[in-house]
Length: 460
Image (cartoon, rainbow, N blue to C red; front, side):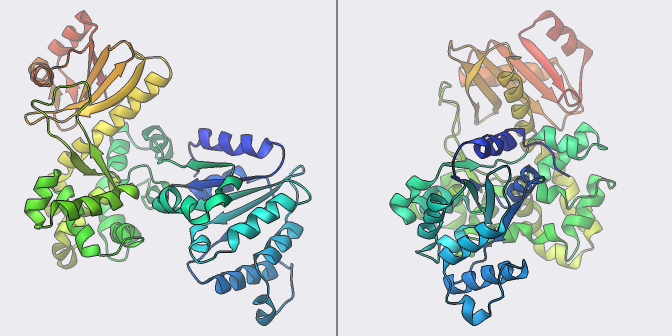
């Protein structure tokens, strides 16, 4: 089921309509839906699609030629294929790809698997695009964020001038998961989003007719299921020294979020930890959180690190930390003992992201009382402000997100105001988000004071 991606589809459509040929790079996390996006875009078009494998240049050429032969474009033997290079392949593709109102479409998936092992590919590709008799749009897809952002351009040098544009395909949002799991309540969709994040590949492994608990038991914790091993695959796909990376990620997933905490727990030097965290951040598996820059640092925690990919966070919190128990207990017994007691706290951490998405959408559509130009959070030693937004005139909006409380009242608001005081911020508006209920007293206060806004989970 294809949901969302209006911005991404518009980007592809606008570029396809441009005169002449173009070469675009689309990249993002594996499973985020790059290939599905392109297939949806090209659903009424003719295209040539090739999925590159991690192999030597000669083997890549052989595999690609075999696929072209299967399509009826050549009758050569393997020995004859080995004499061909990428120039011959592109010529064969061009002859075999039909026009789409005058423009041809070629898609090369996981293209880094070619670039890493070939010095001739980009030369042949750019030559082909330049000399093609009629326009062609080539899409290079990659699941290696670090390669595209840090290694690709230095590797190909001046050839990068032939690239028309780069587009990072982001995770899907909370609104998209609500549409995908249309039969679920808003709260259930929030729970799924908290566990799986915005990766549609992971969504496809959840049964829409099962409860969250039953989905976790059957599709995450059961032996042999895809998601049970996915956390390990995410780390091992591009990283070496897994013992170090897994140690750091395990610490982060279990609350060791400061550099000094990681140093004391692991015994690794701060310099070593910083290098490994940098690699994790380049792959967008970890993020660094700073206090909002206009807030006081007096009572703030500085330089916190968090796992940014939600399912990786779930994996290291629940599966990696308790792997022995997962092996000898039934999935149901493991859920009852190791997952269920800590799941509400886990959702609390991720509820903030959903609330932030909600405020961002309102801000983009001019529906907030301020026009925020920057945003962040304030992580304090005795309480945190989940969301801080500020406009060019220094008007500010602060938000607190409560997942695990059944009822939120004026006492809670007083506690939040104390945290604001510690941060030395002076908010113009305070938003309270809750998965539970608001007391009548708090509702009345909000009605009388328009600077306090209440948002329940169904509004999200």
